[in-house]
Length: 264
Image 1 (tube, helix red, strand yellow):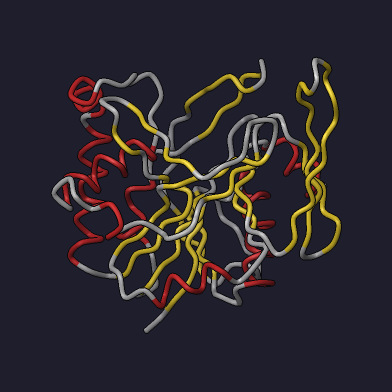
Image 2 (cartoon, one colour):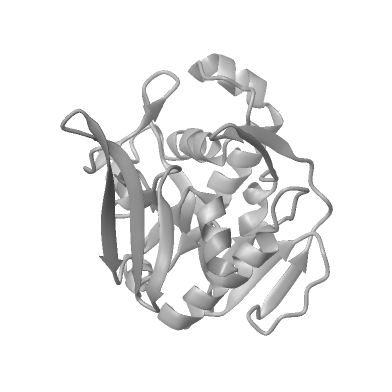
């Protein structure tokens, strides 16, 4: 039974996501000691990756982050099941920093497919465990961390994701969300609901919250196991600076600029 981590990284004109993948892989090696497979559209030779899987070039989307236009390419995540060289796979976004070995417990649940539903934000917003919604008040599942094993259920979820992506406008009308930007989070949510008969809930849910570091929060590495987060927010009618220090904590970093500064 082979186990490993799968990353997708396709560079754009504005971001080197393969650099992000290297940093992500370093943290995987440090805390999980698992082999890493990289899916990309370029030739890469790097000892951090036991497998490099080359795919065709992808088209790009654009979005505004803090007033800056950036590109990202995320149209082939539905191929994770097909491309993974492992029997059991942890699929990660490259902006996910492993700060502990907690993800290893996913192998102990005897589930075919799991991902996060609850999330927690660190930053200016009040931090508490909650579930986000979209469209017709659907509980949103996150595609940031996905565990799957070679199985009928997992294959069905990724096959459904492909159909949703192909007919995204159609599903946007049914579930009443904007089709302007394709989101794997929406696709995986709809796919889970379809495959598990709209009653998956705890069946596929990773039983702890996905910890997101907000877009307007900076992050600096203190040492190999801890990070300092800094941000500003109004407190007692004045803008004040705040700091959070994390220890042995996995973090999903929404502020890509902060991650790239840390890498550099």
